[in-house]
Image 1: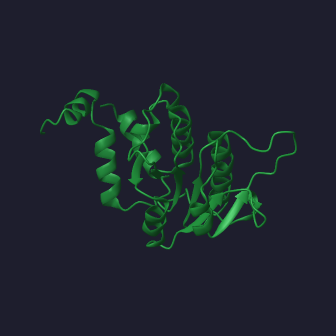
Image 2 (image 1 turned 90 degrees about the horizontal axis):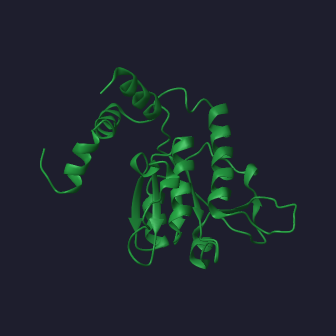
Amino acid sequence: MTLRRRERVATVLARRQPDLTVVAETVHKPHNLSAVLRSCDAVGIGTIHAIQPTGGVPTYTATSASAERWVDVVIHGTIAAAVQHLRRDGTTIYAAHLSDTAVDYRSVDYVKPCAIIIGNERDGVSADAAAVADEHIVIPMLGMVQSLNVSVATAVILFEAQRQRLAAGMYDEPRLDHAELEAIGARWLRSPAERRHDRAGGED
């Protein structure tokens, strides 16, 4: 492992935002979930949450540029379970949802601990997800179509969150504790052969 590679891993981990996340509610299409993961990695999100009736997440695609290696996905059985888990840490829940009370996505505070619920393209977020959210946010649309692709919409929202957090200096110092930085760094630096060995159930 080269020194340059180790420095790159250390730099990326130093910018991770442990109190910013996404909740993907029944995002079935693999290419959409892969694109969401790529955007999450780009803004420093290390863990997202997913809910699927099948109990798992779709197969990742090459469009994620291997983002699934850098972003962990925590599976929950229901949106209620995911939100309960997040609220234990005082997380504010925003739902990307068009409603009578929805506000412009740029008007809310992403500096505080927060999670953004996104839904699939056909149905959007569920009624249950909309009900448990603290606030509904929307991306203003000035054309004929009413919404963006779910992965594009997620990226737009996340880069606003990144903008706010950059202005607040939240990328200037590591937000993960030393033990987490060491553990994640060691996992990321494992060779492809070591990762294949792990997946096959081998021992170190």
